[in-house]
Image (cartoon, rainbow, N blue to C red):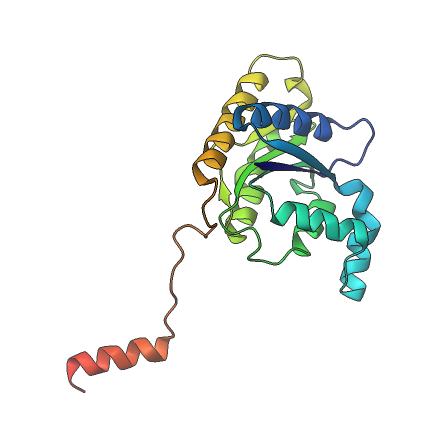
Length: 199
């Protein structure tokens, strides 16, 4: 199996990349998966160019292929203005909206204060639900004070275990968006109701 990690950290060294690596080590071990890391910082220019010319560069195309063919994803972003970073969102904007349907995803974020931990549920979870991915129940947020403190290791192991279980459970199966709804146009619904009522 292939586990792909998307890190949107901008600095070197990066706490975002550190969290990504720790999550990847745990999930890769528990799922017995090969791990590949996509550093968005290195793709920023090609992502911007893709918006203006409509074509991904060589490295961006390789990153998109890795993400869309993965058996599981770990996505980690720093918090900017109480949400995911613009670079993080831009990368997922250039991916086809159905390409991640049914893919298990572990969401994670880093920030300077614990007050931003709600970014997981208010920004990241809705984004990947929109992309029809299967988001694991436990997300991981690491504030500055979490590094070296009790609790972070446990959250990492729990979230990684949930991702590994999903990856193993879905291995070899055709990916499909869960709970996909068939949308019937209103005119067809009206016609069906009129037909049943006799006029």
